[in-house]
Length: 98
Image 1 (spheres, rainbow, N blue to C red):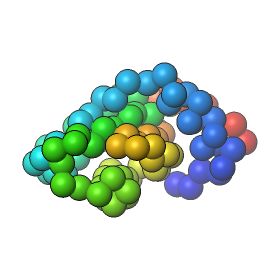
Image 2 (image 1 turned 135 degrees about the vertical axis):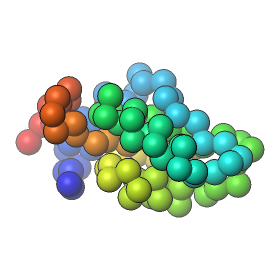
Image 3 (image 1 turned 90 degrees about the vertical axis):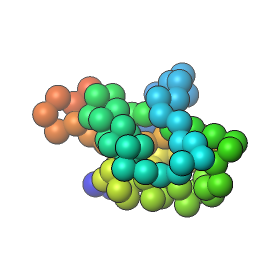
Image 4 (image 1 turned 30 degrees about the vertical axis):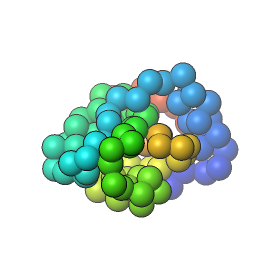
């Protein structure tokens, strides 16, 4: 699942007003965090994740790892926050432009 730059721009616009749903703390990227992110992606399709200050993780590396493990698309990394998108195959909520 690869999205175009136009679709990324659209998702960034939608994600601007979204509050972070998941916070990654000092425990890092655990199975619990990954399952929470997967559930949130199933429910919302587009989510914002925050890496807390007390985490030792590199933000870009962590966002890549989470994106790969949840089969989602990394839309944007901005500071300690990043946007993830995964289309819900059964009940899509977001329609991407072509």
